[in-house]
Image (cartoon, rainbow, N blue to C red; front, side):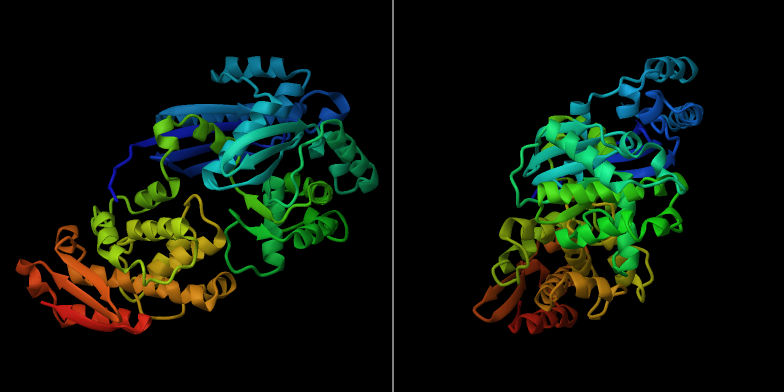
Amino acid sequence: MTEETPSYRRVGVLDIGSNSVRFVIYELFGAAFSPVYNEKVLAGLGRDLSTTGRLSQSGRTEALAALSRFRAIADAQKLDKVLVGATAAMRDAEDAPEFIEQVQKETGLNISPVSGEQEAYLTAQGLVAAMPRASGVAADLGGASLELIRLDNGQVSTGNSYPIGPFRVAGQDLSMTARFDSSAMRKTILNALSANNFPLNGQEPLYLIGGAWRNLAGVHMKRHLYPMKTLQAYELMPGTAQDLARWAYGEGRQDLLSWPGINQRRAETLPYSGLLLDVLLDYLKPTKVVISTTGLREGLVQAGLPNVLKNRDALLDGCRDLARGNLQGVNFAGPLYDFLKPLNPILPQVFEAANEERLRTAAYHLVGIGKGLHPDYRADLVFEDVLYAPLSGLTHKERAYLALILFHSYTSKTRTSNQDAINLLLTQRERNAAQVLGSAIRLAVVASGRSPELLKQLSVRADEKELVISSKAAWSNVLTKRVEHRLRKLGDLLDFDVRVQT
């Protein structure tokens, strides 16, 4: 395994949607990027599209003020680049060209609305940036439109845009007091879908993108006491998703309209979003529903990456970024990989071989991120850090597994600070596998004193049912009782005898 140091950049994205105007600053480290500043204004530019065909006047005022502020922040931050994405309201509204001219005159921002096809493609690229193995259908819901995009193992193909966002279909019925005619809305949705048929494969995942669906998933997490508060890659079985959807536009509608922590303008779109999800579940018949917190904004960043970066593993670059500046981890991952490689045949495996190696390599890059933390709390703090880190390409099970490996690289304790999440996401066999690899990492750390150069002088192997650690001749003095103790701990987990060869 080779060690590389990717370049570091900062990019801003202005996302001018039918409901929100958002500014996000991303830090890029190789193929990995994560938001470091995120601000939105629910201007509701497309709120009047269904009745007037024009942008909301109050929305124009709020959006212009937000864009002026965001431009000032971007200039002050001296970003490497600022990308602009404007979607359905800005391409469809009668007065959109006039507003674009006003924005350019008052802020200097040049806005070129993306087409429905471009929006579908960029949205899918954003999903793939966080889920590079995604296969199935991505559904991106904005204020005015829905995009459906087909994905095949991270490759983006067919995409359609439908004018069935909440502002287009529900219109004034979004308000708390208005009538919510679900039958009429359902008919409108089905007519739009049938007018531009999306190719159906059946029996594949459905990925949900957009703030309304993220909020619905967050409500589901709270109602069902889900122990891991990470929306990215949150999964629902189709029946569970349908129950949530029907509750959202049925008996739970009034609860949603006043749900704590959800802005009123966002809350008004949730019942319709539930209805649309209900229709899509019947229409697409997915195997599971997966929430994505990435979309158009991340797609704009991903599309702008040079090909040499697109071909890198964003998970490993993200782990390098998380460990960046930590002297305990500098250049340690490569020697650690080589040191533990002879044990791979006897280490328990949770995932298929290629994915298991990817996750183990990710763990090796994160060794040492506990630098400076109090030793009594280090294991728990590192566990929480990895569990919620902005890392790409992880399901919740994979994220829990990675966090537990790092936890056990610091401690022999069996209970984490979020044991409910571990018990829900990992079987006992999978927990044991994480403990074994964590213990193996701990052996390497103790034996080498976290020195990559010293670790290169050491080796470990499995002879029949015996673990043997040895060193090059000039370094035998480092193999003390403390190293033997750590070797024995690993041997006990694997039911192996141990030997220090000097």
